Length: 107
Image (cartoon, rainbow, N blue to C red):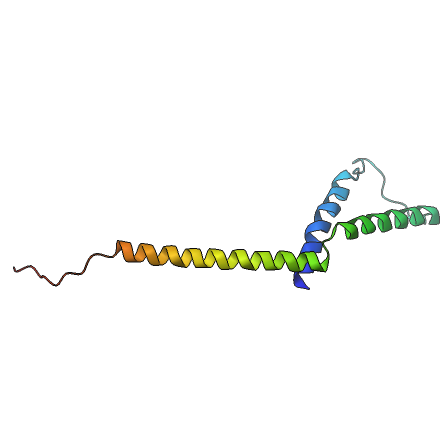
């Protein structure tokens, strides 16, 4: 579930950021917004636009089976990297150790 939330966030954040970046900022000399009500037609249009955007985002999300497959591939890669690192570490620690000798120098 947590991975699904992360995936959803990774898709939604750029979409929201793009919408905010695309929205024109009001000119600095504009008067403060009036307390007039927003027409219902504008609210309905905005609602439809948001519904379409949500539908597009939902279609772009990976399916649970795709997430499971991705998770399995990621675990396999993780196991490979861990084993590879362990093997290299064992090799290098064995190679870099000074040789043990039974002969001690006489002073």
